[in-house]
Length: 316
Ligand SMILES: [Fe+2]
Image (cartoon, rainbow, N blue to C red; front, side, top):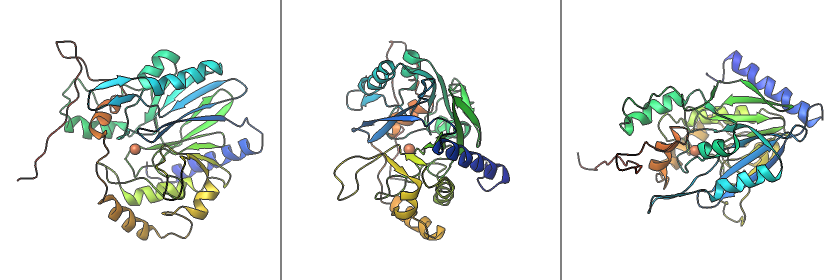
């Protein structure tokens, strides 16, 4: 949905009201625990309602060594240990988008912890694009059927006694969602820390202008909204990873989109910067797996699963 439509504005207003209710104590304040995966610079979050102990896991990581093809579960097992130690009940396993830099552990977590797997409705368009790229054939339905729920802009969902709203924030990819849960917004790959800026917008279906508008929409949430980021890369001069900030901090100091930044200036900067960026190290494995909700390709007749790499040549 276009974020400038009245329905989308109503969605934002609901999210604003929800954040205020959580900040003022009318509704519970969610507890958020982050898990940073250094090899992929990805933050996974477990968010829970302190009263009911209902929880959601957002943007999980499956360890993958592309040289050997070895998959492992160290990062996911840390999340599972935390959920069990804290006696949480997982209601949702959420993805902000089809990641291009790490494999999702969603099916593994769902098998261990339960919960419903969800992503944005735009996944269908992303599946269409990448189904073609990987020549996935008719066995890959491209209907989002790998997920238990596809959220639209403004959809509300429960997490115990917490209120939650999905906001469609396209730009990095066409399907990106931000999940606003109580006073905490999980913004995926839109914003990074204020000293690092914003996510790239040059993947298929990405759009710098859309990204700017999505970010300004997120920055219309109340100043005190806690923002949780999917990645951190340490800005120059900072020696530790940080993945939590606030709307106020982003509006005052984000090096790409602080208040007063003109949309056209952002678009020119973002597009110029994106032209200098290499493809992410794990883009081919990540997309192939994540477009299927984190499920691996079916085994071949020898029982082994394989990933594909489409080859291109610079020569015409
Ligand atoms: Fe991403």
